[in-house]
Length: 238
Length: 119
Image 1 (tube, rainbow over the protein chains, first blue to last red):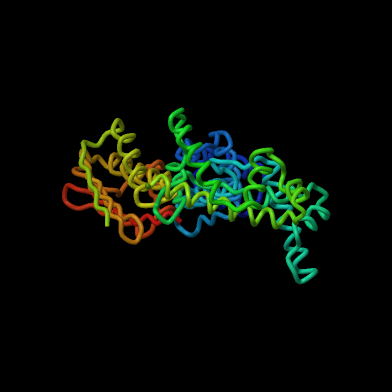
Image 2: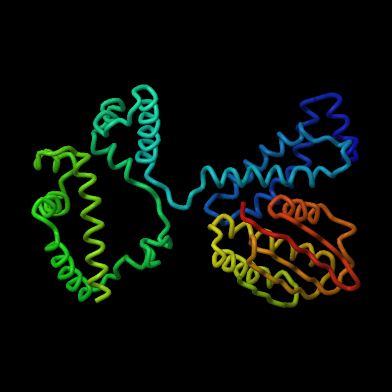
């Protein structure tokens, strides 16, 4: 049966069996297009499934009286569905699922809290609502995925440039540079570095020991890291 | 503004080389990974169209302007008049991924051009 005739018959009858026959007849288009998008971290089978679903939906929407071929009509639909899938699902770098879910939960809770109370919640308040440790909320708020090629500073150095190569001489030199950089910190800042990076305490635990809030530690930590980064960069340049 | 062109005998064995070049140029032009991959697909589909129309040589020019302007010129061939399903799909896919798609056939040559914006 001719394509035009086949679709005209289906439009008239809406017969499920006929629709299935049409889908089977054009399934090769889904396969061809799926193959064009392989090699991006998603299996062919998954792409074929997405393409097939788009094909099924497309059969119902195709109007043979418009004068275009079904292949021409369905190709952009299938490509669009596949691209949407890539956009939504197939990131090359994944945050751990637990962190990713927690991040969404933290964001949703913070939004709800803001609209209910007219102010942003603290990490402790979010932690209480969600029922997770405050430390986890802070981690979830601070984590993100960045490209190693992304500029890490205004000088155009990428994160990749800043990753040290494993070399023992470099290590010694860096230890020396870090030692000198730490000397630029005041006593409270050094105490924080010692708790957080020496004893590897959590931000909450560090806050308790220092008698301040966890948010204060979080802010201070960021400030210290910026300060250290600046000093280290300067010593590398020298 | 980047301008890059290459000319080669058109055959399936050259596709990978051209795809890799297209991906690299896309990356240089600041496209993200997905967009660079899409650019590769567009260049491949265009070359397949030229190949199916009987072209034996191709010249591809990439020009970075408002997006990546790509022009593919095929020597020989008999144009895009009679399309197989494969060609229908290639053309429709191109139409879905690029802007300003034109496909022309003159005396002894075929030309495809488009602007890829990576949307």
